[in-house]
Every structure is written in structure tokens, then in C-alpha cells.
Length: 192
Image 1 (tube, rainbow, N blue to C red):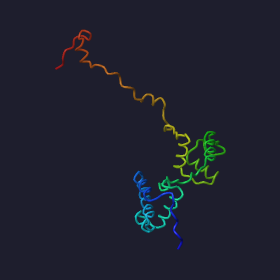
Image 2 (cartoon, one colour):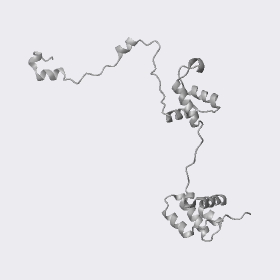
Image 3 (tube, one colour):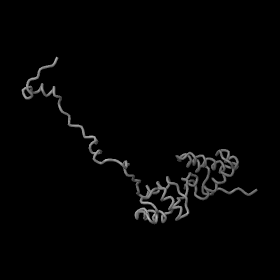
Image 4 (cartoon, rainbow, N blue to C red):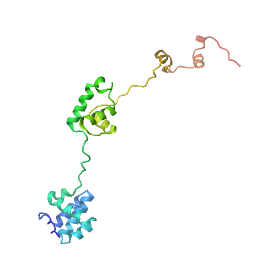
């Protein structure tokens, strides 16, 4: 069995407990208190049990603590998946979009996400979904534009005739106008 990795000598259990008291990160507090238990003379198994983890995870905490001190016990943000296209490839894609498609070469008259995904596959050998490509393009400042749909047999004159006209400005009813100035509109007799 390999020897246990020694903890740093520049800290003691009282300092770790004080740091745990000041910390707002619950995971860091749990790790600091488990390490403080080992500084007090407890075994690694006791420290792992106090931290609620196995011996291998506790060993990882010791390595992180020895390398970076108490700050090494804070969970960092996961790096996530590497991008499908690097910056150079994205610039080439932006240039392709800005230049527009050449119908004889590209076989399309306007770029669609499916066409661009196919171009990326042919050019770089990288499979990229349309959703991911759309997210990249939005981050690069491009927006998806689509023309308003129009029926092929639509009559433009009929469209103008059937357009909604704005409602007229509110006006007084004929009855209210007659009450206001009966002489202007003549005399009216009330019907039955």
C-alpha cells in the first residue's frame, strides 16, 4: 500500500476551521472541515467519512489543497464540450455567408442552415447540427431572415382592396350631434 500524501505544513486545523467559518461555499466548508480532522490527528478514513466521500475522492481533495491551498477546494466551472468550429473556421464561414452562394458552384440561391451544415461537413469533416450552427451564427451577429410567405397566384390589386383600413377617429353619434345643434341638421321627428 502506498504511503499517504502529506498535507501542507503552512496550515493547521484551527486555520482551516476559521476559513470554513468564513466561507460561503458549502462544498468548500465540508472539505476544509474534513481536512482539519486529519490535521488534528485523525485518519484519512475518518476524514473521508466526515466529508461523506470515499478515500479516492478525499485523496483528490488533499492533492487540490496541497497545490492551490483552500481556494483549490472550491468547485470550478466545468469547461464544457469543445466547440465544433474554431475561430479560424468561423471566420471562413462568416466570409462564405457574406459573399453569398454561387448557384453554379453551391447549387443554392440562398443559404439555409442545412446547406451551411453540409458545407462544414465537406470542408472540415465536422458533423454539426443545424441548431448548433444557428447558435454559432447568432453569436457571430447573424440573424435568420425569411421572406413573408406569398401565394404564387396572389393578385396584388386584390391585396390593396382587402387591406384593413385604420378605424376612423372617434366621432359623435348622429343623435348626439343633433342634440348639440338641432338647427344645423334641421328638424327631425322622432319615429314611433
